[in-house]
Amino acid sequence: RKLTMTNDRQATIETKQTINIMMSRLYTLAFALLCLPLASAFGPAAKRGTKANLPTFDKTTQKFVPPPDVSARQFYSPISSMIKAGPVPALTRLLSPQEYEQAVWKYMVDAKDPDIKQAQGNMDAFFASREVWVEQKMLEQTGKREVYDYGQEPGLDRVVLASVWGVLSTSILARATWQLIHGNRNLF
Image (tube, helix red, strand yellow):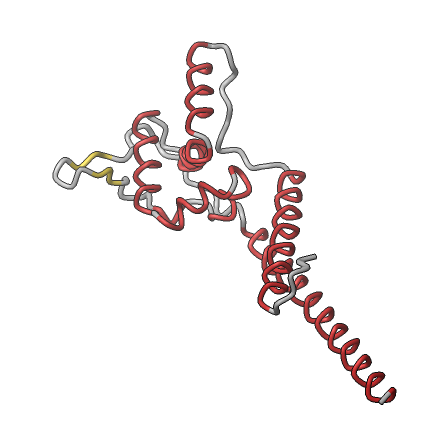
């Protein structure tokens, strides 16, 4: 009987070791998948246009139409949106791309600025926190705040911080989900 208990304990220990190895591989894979898009996170550089190269408003469809040489394919990636402004603008891009595109085209017209990156950066900031963005724009117009370049690329420290935060939060969520699926109430 003692030998059977020892074998059961050994099997339990081996199972836990196997699960730990699988989880560490899962974490490594999740980290690799999160870092992979960072190589192209900032996308291709947007073309600079002229003032005449602005979107137009189509009264029949009630939508903004981009200029002929500009398309939504020139937008930077959703990963860049997430790094620059957080998950809300990235989710807006993924869940309602038409709304996002129309917001970018409308901003280009309102600001009379043909720079796609600048328009995207402003709309990412807008979707992240509307009130803060509006307040910042009002302060810029009154001269109480310097004009912020929303189209600028984030620094390396911001990219690293966002990546580490994403990996940690994904790991904790994956661990808790794994424990709940396997009936363990001790999540950590």
